[in-house]
Image 1 (cartoon, helix red, strand yellow):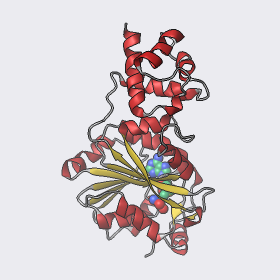
Image 2 (tube, protein in one colour):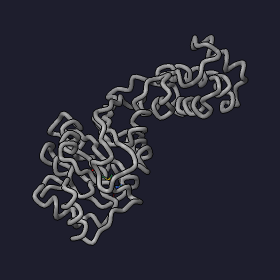
Image 3 (cartoon, helix red, strand yellow):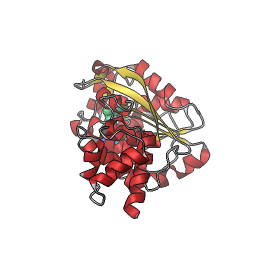
Length: 289
Ligand code: SAM
């Protein structure tokens, strides 16, 4: 059964009395080569377990099952569960779970696979919840090796942007704290059913085993990044003053120029994650005084 064939997908949906559910971001892949490319590139260790978020009709799940030790696929739509049982019947290394990935207990679900051979994540994510799912995975503290996700191209540009680039934002600086993101390839919107309005890009995040940035206080670090981008047109002293009420603008300007060696008229969007770490450390020390 070719799970990327549009006719087959429609037949399967009809067989199980299902409609494509917009509220769950159901746009299914219809290109075998794309599915195989994602499965090939999402991890370099065949002994790994892959956590797949949103298997849909199981096209990517099947390819993952052929390449890796085990696949744990979490699908929110209970209507798809009998369909997945049917399409994935021959793949005994696949476990399908009917749940919302934002609510499931991942440490409990993955404790064995982490001990066995490691875990990576692979998903064609629903657009409406891309950032929350990615942040939940990063903030979970779980030692994933890779997180490979297909997302809107515009979001991929933002996540992979360099400091100073127009697309660079708070989310980019935060992502770089947890890992390194790279764009793998772009997928045109006509490779899905139903067709979404925009193209998608597959990105792969390699999580840092040892974090290269170690801020004195994580909360101040995230607060500094948020403040710098909240009003990105403002210079850094003005943007930080609006949020760090504990310090005077003069103190903040002094930290930026004297302690961090940056120009007073710099904007937050020019700072990379290492510079945000140094800046937040100085702010944290000054607040504590
Ligand atoms: N992997 C399939 C493919 O590439 O054809 C389907 C991808 S489709 C864009 C997104 C899938 O994620 C759908 O099957 C949808 O029901 C599921 N989904 C949406 N929100 C979810 C959530 N919070 N937890 C688990 N699955 C979710």
